[in-house]
Amino acid sequence: MAAFLGRRFVLASLGLFWLAVTTLPFLYLALMSLKTQQETYSASIWALPNSFNLVNYEEVLRGRFFTYLGNSVLVVSISVALIVLISSMAAYALARLKFRLNGPLFALIVAGMIVPVHVTLVPIYLLTREIGLYDTPFGLIGPYVAISLPISVFILTEFMRQIPKELEEAAELDNCGPFTKFFKIFLPLSGPGISTVAIYNAIQLWNEFIFAYVLTSSPDKRTLPLAVWDYQGEYQTNIPATLAVVTLSCLPLIIAYAIGQEHIVKGMMAGSLKG
Image (cartoon, rainbow, N blue to C red):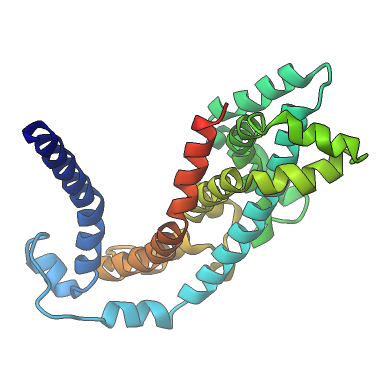
């Protein structure tokens, strides 16, 4: 009994420690965003704000914040939808269809995970200008989908390989073709894996900065990570307003993760326990 209580105490302590590690930075960020410019430069960075001041949030919301938010929602939504569709179909072909180049093709796709995505920045910039998509939110969708496909195909391929063959054989007895089997059997049964891929990529793309910075230039075409540039001057930065932007940018991710964390855990556990 004592050993059991001791283990429970250790696990609870580790859980509280990890909660503090993950929560305190966001709490500090939120508190700093409530300070005024004068407080930021005159008081200690660890000092609490003198009052519950929402001026910075009012300034941010009166600016172009909702334009950036709308662009981010548009780009990330379309990108994630395309990532899920393309990666799930590719994963089905690699996991269930037999053809000569199956193994090498899968290895080539997985090898894309080790390529630093930023080495493609200049070619993508030149290509985007050439096809007329530079400085548009739609110019970000192609690169976002491309850089996200290797990990997505890898996750879903391993997941679909664990689906029982008996289901596929039963569908073949009913004269179901590859597309019917994919949409009627494999896509629904891969729900946890697809949820994992969708949420993971949505979080990554929501925070993506460098491609958005290089491929857009007009303020009304930028995404949310670039909103901080509105509060940087030539000689000084409005630190509290910048932190207010970051806080507001984090809120959708926190809400989405709070809603979808169960799906992420289920997807990871399903992929690791099957077979």
